[in-house]
Amino acid sequence: MKKIGCLSLLLIALLVVAFFTCPPKEKHVDKIAYTVSNVVDDETKGFGKFAISLIDELTGKDIVKRSVDKVLTVDDYSLLSLGKVEWQGKEHITSVGIFGMVFTMPEEMMKDKLRKTIEKLENR
Image 1 (cartoon, rainbow, N blue to C red):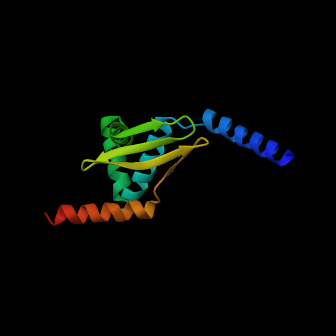
Image 2: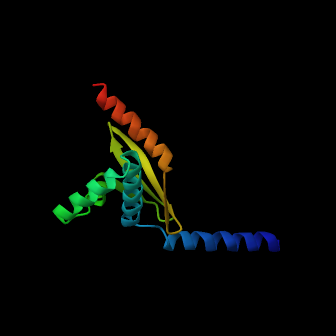
Image 3: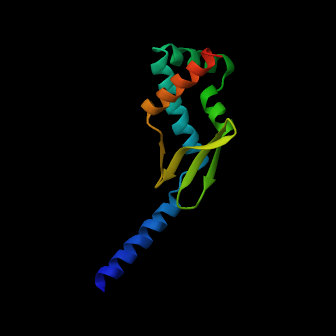
């Protein structure tokens, strides 16, 4: 009986912590923008970060963050939050936030998707 009481108390404590640390949209935007910047930089052999920073300097804006912020919607389920993007008529989950952290797809997976998208555009 003591085990069940301790487990129940632990579960309630975890739920309370998850509730109060559910990440807001800004954390999702920051994480996705950081990941996208890294992917673009890797795929363009360093020129991507230079181009992005040059555009940011000229416009005085963080272009990647603003772009992500415009297309990303975040559903807050109190214990966790899901970042979603609508693309080609379908909604895709791009990030999951829980316990104050945001998780996105691995950079390698994002690079593969970027390469496939570029190939489709080139073949049109």
